Length: 157
Figure 1 (cartoon, helix red, strand yellow):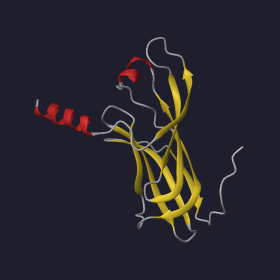
Figure 2 (cartoon, helix red, strand yellow; figure 1 turned 120 degrees about the vertical axis):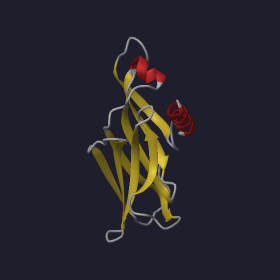
Figure 3 (cartoon, helix red, strand yellow; figure 1 turned 90 degrees about the vertical axis):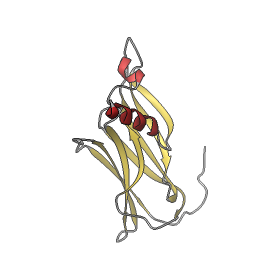
Figure 4 (cartoon, one colour; figure 1 turned 60 degrees about the vertical axis):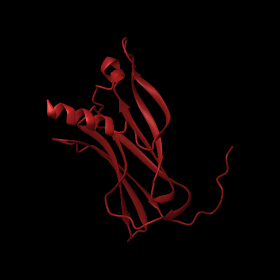
């Protein structure tokens, strides 16, 4: 019984989403009951590097379990990080440092983005992967941003 109390407290303490803003979504499968299965695109800014935004696309399970937050989302994800302004590294970067984390199941599975600084090539590298308390997934995606001078404002149309 005590174990259930600890588990319940941990669930309350964990955020459902960390720093990400949903950009859009598309349905991939109709579900008669509950939400449709979908692919969600989210954006988040690197908390230690000004001028970098990452876009993460991932599957969200629908149906009754998905609507109640009980379903486990698939491990596949895609990431694209871009320079959106002058790059300013605010503090020393640690290799493999977590920059984004989101739960993809009720308790045991998370999707994470970690950052590496390839100093030899003056590039920031971002890796997205899924892990599980017992067994993670080898599926992953990577993106890289060369650290270059920002030449000016983006022209919008």
